[in-house]
Structures are given as C-alpha cells and as structure tokens.
Image (cartoon, rainbow, N blue to C red; front, side, top):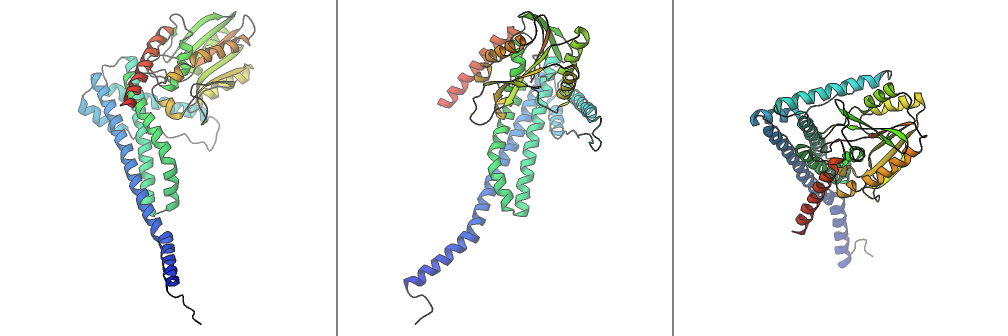
Length: 386
C-alpha cells in the first residue's frame, strides 16, 4: 500500500497545485499590473483633455485682444481655483453665507476673464467665464482620478482598484462631455442645459426688459398675465432668477402660480428629450436661488409647477442635440396647461432655468439655433460614416 500518488495521478496533482498557485498568487498580480496600465492611459487621456480645454480658453482670449503668453500663464494657474463652503456647525444663515461666497467667486471669474480678454464685450465676457469654469471642472476631474490612481499604486489596494475600474468609464464620458461643452462656450453655442431658457425664449415675441443677469417679458396668454423670465443671453449665464421673481412680486403684487422649466437627469432607458411634469422648483446648482423661491412660495401660498426635460449628464454639458431641441414644443404645451390651471385674469410667472449660452432673448434666435444643431448633426454623421 502506498500513500503517494503514482504516475499520471502525481502529474495531475502537481498541475492542480500549480494552477491554484497561479490563480491565487500570480493571476491577481498580473491583473493588478494590467489595471495600473489601463488607469495610467486613462489618466493621461484626461490630463490631455485639460490641456486641450486650456488651449481653447487661451485661443478665445487671443481672439478678444489677450496676449497669448499672459493668458496661458493665468489660465494654467486659475485651473486650480476653488471655493470653500461656509461653516455649517450653526446652520442659521448658511444660505446667505453661501450666496456671498458664490457671488465672490463670480466676481473673481469676471476679473480673470477681463484680464485675459480685455476687448470682450459683456456677452463674450460671459462666455469666457463659462469657458474658464469648464477648464476648472475638467482639471478637477483629472486631479481626482490621478489621486486615486496614485493611491492604488502606493497601497496596492485591489479593492480600490476594482472600484476605480468600474467608475472610470463613466468619469471619462462626463469629461468628454465637459470638453465639448467648454468648446461650445468658447464658440457661443447652446448646450443641453440651455433647454429651459430656450423654451422660454421661444415664447417671447418682442424685446424684453433686460436686467443685469436676466430678462423679463410680459404677455397675455389665455386670459392670464404671464411674466416670462430667463437668464440674459446670448452670453453664457445662469442669471439671478430669484431676484427677478421677487422684483415682479414687489411691483405687481399677488402671483397665482410659478412655473419652472429645466433640464433634468434622465434614468438609463429613458428617452433623451422626454418631458415630465411635476411640482416644486426645477433648479439645480448650489441651491441658494431655489431656497429663496421655495421660501417665498411657501410664505405666499403660491403653487409651483416643475417641467423637466430629460437628458444624461454628458448631454447636459455637451452641445445641444436635436432630440433636446425638438422637445421645446412639448415643453411649451406643458407650460400652457400649467398656465390654464391659474384663475382667469391672474398673474403667472414662468422661469426658464439653465445656461443660456448661445440662446438669445426672444424667438428670433430659434431658427438660427435649429440650423446650427442640424449642421452639427450632419458633421457627426459624416464623421461616423468615414
């Protein structure tokens, strides 16, 4: 009787033990090495996107009277600009502190934009500011990814590597959209997030009253006095829409309804450009304006309607697609239905929320935007066909 395997059985046993060794010790190291190579390639790709975005900003500054060397230096340094959230240990008054920080940030962007593009008019200056914001957003993405890649390299943590592997494709998609959006800002073209202001602009027939950051237009719709508000265009702005609403109420008195229309993040499987109706203030961002509008509506008992036009995060920050543009008719119909829910003879406020880059202040711009989008779609189709 023998206790050891003989012949072929011994060989099989050795192969089995070696296979286990490869599976448990060698394969993970090989896979980790492959992951690190993939991470490095992706990180460098993101860093190249940052360089491209900076070049877009510099070229825009050059077109507006800036000196290239000076613009390059300022844009590179400003890429790391940041804003610190106010302390919230005592939440009382935090909204006003946050508003002050945001306004200080906007003024800093305006100063830098004036410095690198001294000949830019107000509308182009707004586009320069938005272009700089695009550069900062891309730089932040690249830096965070680089940080995590170096953390994985330093610690050899396989779990972090697997998490990074899963989220990296989504991050790259967002970065690609941000780069396209940065280019759109520099050229003064609409992005997906501009669909809210576009819908409201399509309802404005003449010349509205222009404020510093937003416009107001009054018209009669189905026996109701309707005030249409959007950020002032065609420069890239988000506007101070809450101030416009407060101004109307101070001047006109009682308001029966507030209707907000904005881009909204779609779920996977939802159609780009689909229009949904709900209640509440449809407005993203830091939340200061939204809080003020909600507070006013709650105190005065004003019903709030929300109209959301669905798109992905990448589509929101990329040049506007035709599917998104085509949604404005359905969104306008939703607004008209909401207006009819207000009593006859009452006053209604309609607010177009979003980035108004490339979108003018009345419906005269609609045809031009449609033609530009169609031309862009044709170019993409030709590129795909090659």
